[in-house]
Image (cartoon, rainbow, N blue to C red; front, side):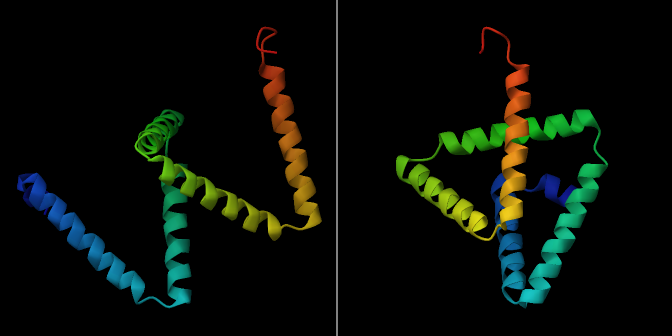
Length: 128
């Protein structure tokens, strides 16, 4: 299978990826909400197991790759897309905050204070 894939033209490889994505989407569309949640849980567990097996160098490499990918994607956005992403992020944050309990809100504030204090402590006198 891998040898066959290696011989495929870029166009054929892309066509095969598209077909695989369509098959996956059709399979997921037929899921019940319980099956969808089970699939998400399995994916999270697989991802966590894969990350747990990484060395610190591999973790840093993955972070760098993700940062670069994200920066490239953001650089290609139009101003309308940027505004839409900001709106979606704002709505998502508001929805997340709306369901927090008072204790969770206070925990987050405390965590934020600690992070800011650690960040400030790391600044040099010139940066202050």
